[in-house]
Image (cartoon, rainbow, N blue to C red; front, side, top):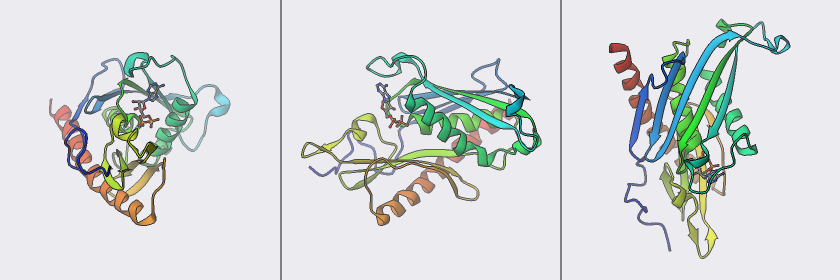
Length: 235
Ligand code: ADP
């Protein structure tokens, strides 16, 4: 059956309900929460502070160290606590997605520690985590050239859709999985793509459409992020 109507009735280019807030962890130097519907991520930033062990220090640039994880009961089947291949991969791609926006050359020999915890997961956790992290880094007052905004764009039964749920990620046509998932992160001011992962199959024409859709939706997320930061500054 072609995917003509989304399971939750959303438009094809519509995200789930976005909620965002900064300052959710008072002890952190910067913190934020970001939700795509029932996918909820919190991010905490500590630093910059001197990086140890000393041999990892870089005299030209500070280092962003990200740890992403999910709470055991953030998913329906209990997730084994502790790091996994998946969490190590997501921590690494998150660092790479955020690094281009950070002016870490101002903090030689230092580390900025970023912790992302997914407290509820229904797909799109890396994108929600990047949005929360970008807000937390700005909330920590770190010099940045831009925020980073992130969303996943998918192809379900031939249709380009934004911000897939787990049901959509698992969509099957004729008993075969027919979903492609592409998480994007974009620096909206210059349009630079800092994350693009591809799980599934897609034509170059569809990939262009997915990128255009991601840019449009990231601009909407960017507006929410700026508003939340502005409101926190005004308080
Ligand atoms: P993302 O969360 O960025 O979409 P994945 O595609 O790896 O990343 O995961 C998709 C979804 O699968 C997650 O958001 C979560 O809902 C579910 N999931 C991931 N890992 C587990 C796990 N260990 N147990 C149960 N569900 C999981």
